[in-house]
Image (cartoon, rainbow, N blue to C red; front, side):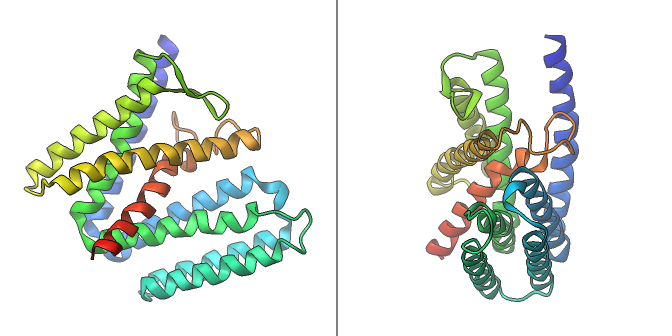
Length: 260
C-alpha cells in the first residue's frame, strides 16, 4: 500500500504540473500552443523510435528527423492545416516505399511519422475551433486516465486485455468512462455549453482514448518494453501519457471537420 500511495502521489504532482501547463498554453493559443504540441510530437517520435529502434538505421532516422523538422517549420509558419496534412500524407507514402529497400522491411518506420504528426495537426485544428473544445478533450483524457487508475486499483476484478496490458481491468475502463463523463458534464454546464452531442461525444472519445492506450500497450508488448520512457516521474514516458490523446484528438478533429 505504501508503494502504491507513493506512486500515486508522484502521479498527482506530475499530473497537476502537466495539466496546469497544458491549460495555460491552450488558453494562450496561437504559436504558443503550436510549439507546445510540436514538442509533444517530437518527444513521442523520439520515444517511438527508441522502442522500435531495430527498424531504424541511421539514414532512416535522420530522414525522419528532417521531415519532422520541416513539418514543424510548416506548422509554425502558419501554412494551412490542409496543406500540412498533404505534406504528412506524401511523406508517409514515401517512407512506406523506402521500407521495401530497407533492412529489415517493415511498416513500423513509416507509421512512426504518422503517429507523431497527425495528433499535432488534429490538436491545432481543435484549438483553432475553440478553447472550450480543447479543454473538453483534455478533461475526457484526464478523466479516463485518472478514473481508470483509481477504479482499477481499488475495485480490480476481471482483466480487460490480459495479453496486451495485464493491469487493465473492466472496472478501470468503466470507472474512467464515468469520471470523464461527469467531469465533462460539469465543465460544459459551468460553461453554458451543455448539449446532447457533446455529452455523447465524451463517452465515444473516452472509449477511443482507451483504445489508444491499449494500442500503445500493444506496441510496448510487441517490443518487450515496460514504459515508453522515464521523463515523467510516476507516469513513465510521454507516449504513456498521451497515448489516449493521440487517438481521441484525431477522431474529434474528424468529427468537427465532418460536422462543419
